[in-house]
Length: 103
Image (cartoon, rainbow, N blue to C red; front, side, top):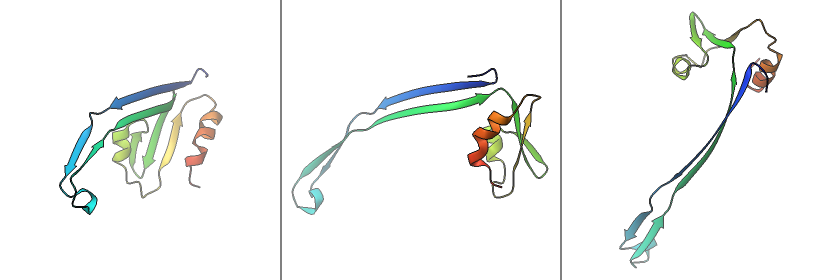
């Protein structure tokens, strides 16, 4: 895409064993009945990775914005500032983040 941006794509497919449920009073009909439940998960993931360092700042706390554990440690009810550490142009990054910025 460019020298600072990588696109990551993943596809996961999980098929589970069938689950059979038998009832003496199927759907309140007083008749025996059986249901068979099948489950398959199909997940498609897409992420964009920038080579810049990002920090989130909330009060006196500064955390790495790429750290999910760091994000969970913040009080998300308070304002959070984003700092991008680079000498490169951040126009493209800011355009990608625009839908998530509260002004």
